[in-house]
Amino acid sequence: MSSTVQEVLRAAVDGRRITFDEGVILMREGRLHELGRAADAVCKRMHPEPFRTYNIDRNINYSNVCAAVCDFCAFYRKINDTESYVLDTDVILQKIKETVELGGDQILMQGGLHPDLPWNWYLELLRTIKSHYPNVNIHGFSPPEIHFFSKLYRMPLEQVLGELKEAGLGSLPGGGGEILVDRVRKAITRGKVLTDDWLNVHRVWHQMGGKSSATMMFGHIETLEERVEHMDRIRQLQDETGGLTAFISWTFQPEHTDMAEVPAAGAFEYLRVQAISRLYLDNVPNIQSSWVTQGGKIGQVALYFGANDMGSLMIEENVVSQAGTVHHLTLKEIQGAIRESGYIPRQRNVFYEYIDHGPEALARVDTQPVKVNPLPILN
Image (cartoon, rainbow, N blue to C red; front, side, top):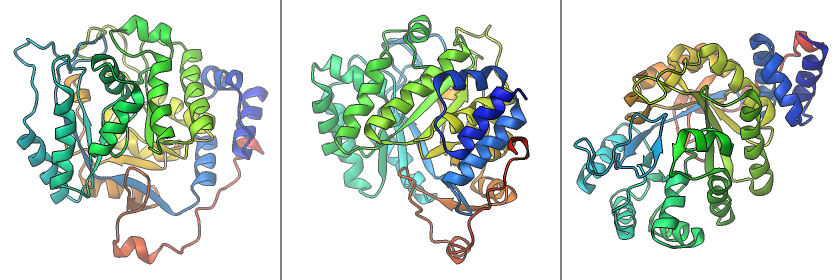
């Protein structure tokens, strides 16, 4: 390991914010095990509790109709395609019922950018869901959807988000982030929100007191510098608003997309980037593993590379699976992966509050924190 990389890792472990240029150095020169050791130390400093978390929710894609064209997406359909759909409200309610019966407290509800649904359709859907399931959090509508609503219905963001919130929206997902660099976004998407507007959806939501998450899909046409630029824009937003609960990254899944010729990034690169995200995003409290794209074993290993959360049971997933990537874990397997990693599994909600009351968890709440061992490579 070069002395420069060693200095950057030591600084991050000690709690000093690393710079953009230092982030690029880690992307270019950091070796996997060294990045992992440092990210694990930072994670344990930020989360010394003996728990690692998961949640139970369901992805409900209310429609696959989308006015945008994204070369990386195998899910979307145009409005007149034979495979296009809009789910009936009764179908959505049934999906939520099944989720609640499995112990879930949340739905992740997203769709495409549908050009013909009336604004009231969304409001009535939210009101109906909340009337039937008042305790279920609706984690819904990605920033591209919110921005699209604002343009399509000619309403300011504040009005769009205010009316959605009043109707029952609880939190915003970080979908549609891909890489927050306009060069990349313009090259792989048409008709979709650009960087500043994506960030501003979160900004306005946070100003209203809301919480949201941030994501990154990497491993396609972006440069290493652009990966760091993406993280830097997230970090700047969090400095400004403090409204982000978590960061989730995953690798582009090229199969069945218009970018199928792009070589798929593997687990090695995934773990490297996740570790760097933990080191760089010093103000984002939680890093979530992406077992859905990487599989259960790598999802478990990610708990040693800066992640403090295993993500969702994922009762239903439609977007990544359309690209040919299908991984399944049961609740027992998620809990077992956390235990095998040396932690106690705890169920949490979207705000990263513990919501389980299991005897195993409660019996050990007062145990000693996880020990943060000094890194041999940094001594």
